[in-house]
Length: 294
Image (tube, rainbow, N blue to C red; front, top):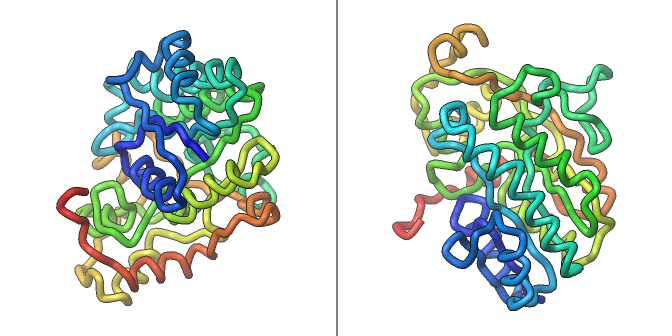
């Protein structure tokens, strides 16, 4: 199986590269140096030469060190998260290539009114249409709108990724390094399982559409901190903001999404996603430093 990969150099893309090669698939990386990714004709021509069996789009704009950076770089954020998915869709449809797009659960906030997590059929409630979101979340919601009629397309929703390898993009590492934390309930994604489930969609040709690939269940920031301390990985005294208002006034520019997603569709499709607390415990038990190359 030949897999074309856009955005293979980031936190998520690196894991995709590793697992694609680990499955003995052929990896075809595509970057800005190869072609203008925003030009449908150029991307289509390049894909025709590569002749992939499937494509994965990890490219996007997240902002560094966090989504607040998107507020001052809106043009690039909009292009990476809303325009590019449409270009990829057009190129893949022209060549009849099945593909998957890494989206985000940050297009939601809270829970469903009945207390359950948001399902794939629920419309985003943290977007430009509600005028209550960060610019980043708004562009990710737009990206999904653009792909609503895409053919042979998977939308994989990622939510606060973590792994057992220390690094600047790892949620667990972030908690250990931030001077002060906001206590909030969220769904999370074990990055290894997220990528494995995404590739399984392509390899097994599951029905196309949207999949919440979060680990079942949810946790609060304090619960994750307790697990970190119990594991012995970090024993510092964690500090918390007294309220959302204090967090927004002292540490944030843009509103934050804190939400719970329902991953039962993915589970019923046979995708392996471990209960979130168990997955966090496993990551902390096998915790290791980031490699020099990482």
